[in-house]
Length: 123
Image (cartoon, rainbow, N blue to C red; front, side, top):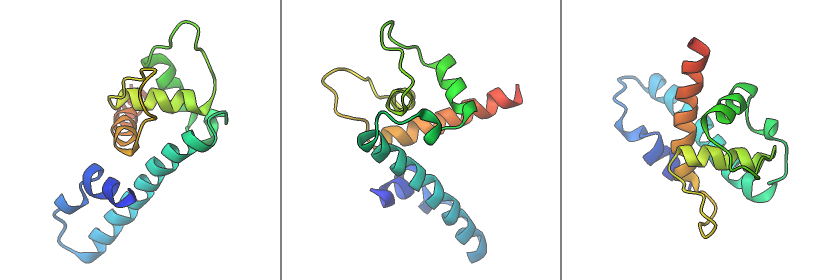
């Protein structure tokens, strides 16, 4: 699954860098990003009641609180709750019959969250 994140999510094969040093730096960065996506996906399954600050920054938590609406009676402050919000940014519907979000949905959601958080910090 880790390599799928690198290949499909990061599109590592499409980078057109001319030197080996630049390619090494890019792949190193992609490995860190891919590990974070995979780690967050597995963390949601293994420790759903953990505090959200375990995997998310304060900026990311604030952006998620403002951006993704909660259901009226489901206001929770757990890591699982915030990771579902990230998955919803990536297209996860969060229906009762849906399986837990996978790496691809988490990748898309985290990518959107990063873009939105950067825009919030600039603005």
